[in-house]
Every structure is written in structure tokens, then in C-alpha cells.
Length: 363
Image (cartoon, rainbow, N blue to C red; front, side):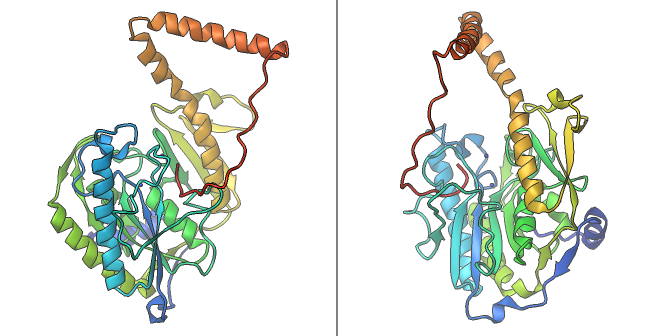
């Protein structure tokens, strides 16, 4: 269901200790010496400059979402301008937010015309399905958020109530981008988001990071002047491109231990006691042969953990004047569906036929 430059003197120690199971290789080839410097820009929507209203990143709130779209385009354009100023010759943009909008969250008419949006003829996961070798020289991530438990503005990982773990350490979506592209030797060089994400990314000290705001809770923030943030974005994006050759490629030793920790409204408690499942304290762990397998396994567990969501729906319905009747009707509908299927009176609908539409990333 989307960044800070660390000045802490202990950052190098954190890299060594926090990423003990991570094999990190420093780049030795100076990409900037090439004629072409190709950069892929990921964008989320919770880490925007000027944003302190959570409704601005949800398509389901038409009274606020258009404001978020304008803020998103403004952040992206500042970064894109900096990337070109730093020497990029091609900049592509991919939607990694998934607001519920059937169209990309960033409007083409607001986006810098020099940038190309990524579209494909079939659904794709922007985090792991774009990593063809020799396509890009670096990736950046704009308007990102802190990980679950970091108490940032809209902090989460992948979706509500999920916390992805690699080798016992929680990771952010920005790190998912870095590890995914590390498989083909491409570094992540720039991130923007709130101060809590900056703290999360102390383990990646080479990244040019721009703090867009100070998180005061998951739904509130103290804002920086937007013009000041955009100026810093241009400066640091340009510097990130010029220093690609000094960036670090994020790799992991294989096999690795992966897992998903669920917090409300998600839950994995129902998996306790299932033979073959490594479950403890709302966390399921497994051994994966590589990062793609780890990611795919976590995404499968995300689907399982979402079974905790209907509890919130039930609570909401019961508060309505006719809530008890609605829940009773729902219970009866379950029984009728079961009986109709058993009797041959109902079959699941056929999948919708494939169309010639294009897909833009996270839906």
C-alpha cells in the first residue's frame, strides 16, 4: 500500500553491527564517467514536503487527495531537476505508493516533461520486477516513510500493521529498494522523508537524505518550509548523481532468515500451533535462498496477516444503528453461500478477461 543524510559519527559502527549478516560491497566503477547515467525514481506519498494530513495520500478522500498529488509532483520535480543537474541523462519514475487510484498517483501534466513514467503491459511489483541488469545506474526514493514501530508520520512497512525482517532486523521500504537493486549491482543513492525515516536509515550512511518534516505522531507532523526542502532536494539529488561511483551496493549473504512481524490491525496469531510454521510473538520466520524468495514469502504472509483486518470492520459495523442486523445478515449470507456451493447452485465467477490496458506499479 512510499531519505535523510546522517551526520552521526557512529554511523559506520551501525553499519558494521546492524548489518552483521549483510555483505555490503562498495562500488569501484565510476558510473558518472559514462556518457549515459540512467536513474529510476521510486515515489511513495507519505513523506511529502508540506504534508501533515494523512488524507492527502489516500484516493478515497477526494477532498484532500488532489492536494497530495500536487505536493507529490512538486517533490518529484525538485528531485528530477537535481538529478539532471548532477549529470543524469535519463530519469524514469515508478509509482510505489498505491493510493487506490486506478491511474498513477503523479499526474503527467504536473510532472517534469523530461522524466518518463514506467508502464508495462501486465501487472508488476515495482520493488522486485523492474531489476533487469544494465537498465539503470542508480535508484532514488522520494516521499518515503519510516518503518513499522518507528513512530514516524504514517510509519509502516508494505502495508498496515506489517514489519518485514531480514536476519532478525526490521527493514524499511527504502531498504527493500536497495536490497532488490543490489541483486544487479545498482545502488540506492538518495531518499527523502521524515526525521524518523532518517533515523531508520542510519545504517545506510552514503545516502543523500532530505528531511521533509518532523513526525510528532503517525498522523501529525511539524513542517519545514517547502521551498527550503525543495532547494535541498535539488542540491542533494545532484550531488548523489555526481557521487554514484562512491555509493554502496546493498547485498545479503545467502541463504537468509526472513520474517514478518504483525501488529494491529494485522495479526498472525492464528498461525500459532500450525505444524511446520515457525511462529513466536506475532512473528513468522523462514529461511529463503535469496532476497526475491524472502520478499515473496513475506508478501504471502502479508496476505495471511490481513485476516486480522475484518475485526476492525466488525467493530465499525456493530457501532451503526442497525449494526447487529447487518452482522446477522452477514452470518446468514455465509451459510447460504456454503449451502449453494455444496448444492451446485453457485460457482466462483470466472476471472476477468485480460485487456490491453497498461499497468503503472503499485495499485
